[in-house]
Each structure stands twice: as structure tokens, then as C-alpha cells.
Image 1: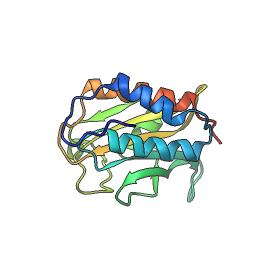
Image 2: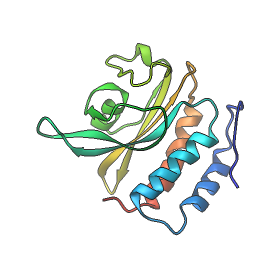
Image 3: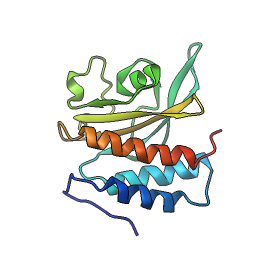
Length: 166
């Protein structure tokens, strides 16, 4: 049913959008959709070692909010990330997508998986409210291109429209 890439980096995002729409059809639950979407991204894009969500939650040890791990595919990761810390925290605090060709050159990078070398993080925003971030990592430097950011933003927009958030 879904395209699966093993070595090909060029991606037909218009095809992936159609496939994701089919996958998310008739389900609106946040957890179910996030789990399915994470697996879909992980299986559909080549050369990834992590794909998943962090959700905005009340901070456990301080006032304010932080990111808490949600559904994902890949190795065990950091459970909580403070706003402004690492790529995920920066994307959440700044409410903007961040494409990082070399995570080791990103000031304040959090090495949840030492194998990760590049990363793309996109905020999950619906009706002006930040719900979390979509985080995608690769073991390859310079894995992600502007075309990937555009395609992943289109996929995430579909996910957001198809999902009721808690």
C-alpha cells in the first residue's frame, strides 16, 4: 500500500501526501494518528534513525511548559526537552521549522542518539496553538534538503487537519 524507500533520497511527496491521507482517513485520535504517521514517515523516507513527536506538556520540575516524548519510531530517546534546548526545544520556542545539516554544529544540541548527524524539526500548530513538534533524525550529514522541509510540512499539515488534539 505504501512506498518504501531503502536507498533513494529523492521522494515523491505528492504521492506520500495521498498515501498519508488514506492512512489517516476515518481516524481523528491524536495518539493513533501520531503513531501511524510516525511509522509512515520512518518507513517511507530513506536513511532515517528516528521519526516521531514531542508534545507540549506542563513542565515537571519548573513553571511553564516543556516537550514530552510521544509516538515515535527509532531508538530510545530523551523523554523531556525544555523549550529553547536542542533543535526540538528551539523549534518549539521559536514556533518555526528548523533544518540542521550537522547537529554537532548546532549550539546546544541534545545528543539523545549519538548516531544522529542531521535533523529536521517542524512545529505542530493548529488554530494558532502549539501542540508539539515533529522530529526526524538521520545518521547522515546533510540528509535533509529544502525540498524535504516543504514536503514534510505538507505531510504534517495533512496530519494536523486530520487530528483532534487533546
